[in-house]
Amino acid sequence: MKRVFGLAALIAGLILIGVGPSYAQEGQGQCLIQSPTNGAQTRGQVIVTGVATHTDFQWYQLGYAPDPNPDGKWTFFWSSESAVTGGQLGVWDTNQLADGTYQLILEVHRNDGNNEHCFARQISVNNSSPTATFTALPLPTRADTPTPLPTAEDTPTVMVEQPPTATPRPTPTYSGVNNPTPTPQMTRFQLPIDPASVRTAGCRGAQLTILIALVIALYFIIRSIVAHGVRKAWKPRDTEGFHTRRPREY
Image 1 (cartoon, one colour):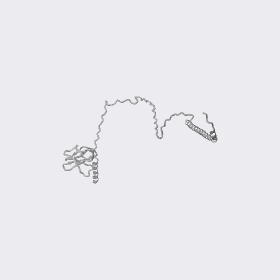
Image 2: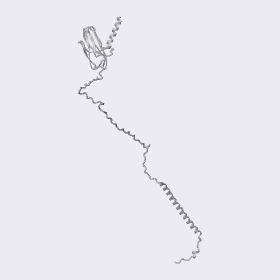
Image 3: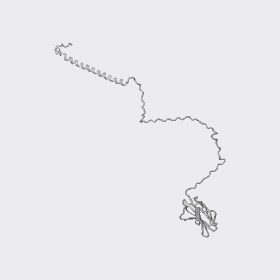
Image 4: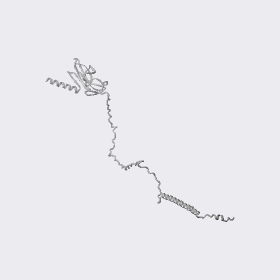
């Protein structure tokens, strides 16, 4: 039975250390860190409050270490010989620390050489990002309250019907290759007879007339030559009359 009660007490003690602010009391002594609490977000100068008292009180000190702290080494930054029954224990300057998770320890020392311990764990230090500040907007006064405007039911809406807008037709685009630009031509009077055929027939008639004239002239020339030759060949030569012809009388 003693072993069972001892194991239950050990488990209760571990739960008390891991969940909330550590609290130790022996007789009429108290050790408690009230602020910052477990899992708090801190930056800059952090005010540590709590309780550090005992009937045999001698002094107390505050320290910090990374969380977790497997080596059990602490850096103490504050101490006092005055007991605190619920107020400021000290000031923790986190400006020189790297951002991360830390834990605090409070040691209450007694005159008999014993001491009490309490902790605050999972405290986040974040000095790199600025703290967001919120400014509350002033509430509107009666003078600032706007006068309500008439609703849509009070003002009739006049509907003006607009004439339909003509949809512009797209302008056709002509290509210089596929659609050659037509060349304007003069309007000619169409005769019943083609002048070109008349001109051609006239040229041919003139040529034929000249050819006929040449043939006729050649005919007469040849005829004259032939007739002269025939007459000359058939006419007897008058040799005797040349000598017996009477001389011309003058």
